[in-house]
Image 1: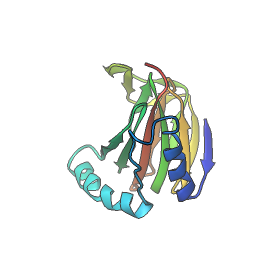
Image 2: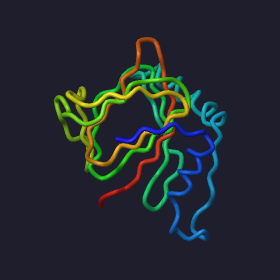
Image 3: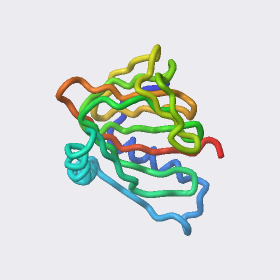
Length: 162
């Protein structure tokens, strides 16, 4: 896994670079500032408080990727996406991302999607606002939060396999 610190504008440009090769006539330009993402995250914070401590929404769908905004106020379980890579831009907060290893209590939750209670034996990387994280398809991963903290992150789900 490669973890890189980028300025917010560079992270957003990276997102838009993913649409290269798609006709400009079929695509519209989407632009979100960190402040706009945090404003949008307010309702996710409320949903998370009323549910299990996490909430997300799809922002836009494109031919081979889509974007999301996610909020967590507690650690998540383990995940593995067989067909999609994840690219996270941390907008606010901090966490530890665990990658690799094995999923505990693996369960298929849909086509190409596997969940577990945790990731065991993976590598740990602390992340904070401004960081960008790329997780290839097929790699188990988990977001672990310090007690009493939260994290807001922009997600690009990139289709790597059909």
